[in-house]
Image 1 (cartoon, rainbow, N blue to C red):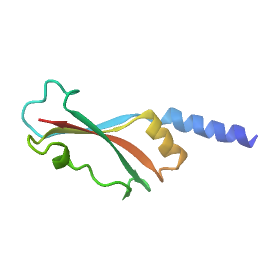
Image 2: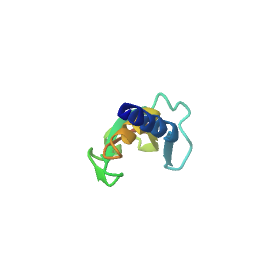
Image 3: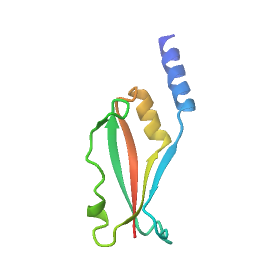
Image 4: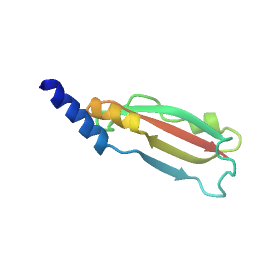
Length: 100
């Protein structure tokens, strides 16, 4: 019986969680070939988003000569599921950087 309650809670958490993206644009024209300029890095935080476990994304390291055009943080279904299982004590997110 206890396993049914746990499975039901996990199912409810996965059905009510969603994917989202936050997009920052640095002005100017967008890069035409976004996939060619894309750099991805995982960012880890937790405790309801109050504590960062990884360093901030270093835009100068990725786009040292040309500068950055856009930054996008993404919460996928799998990272939302990890967050739900850990009660938001750990939340991985993917950060995508597009250079000019």
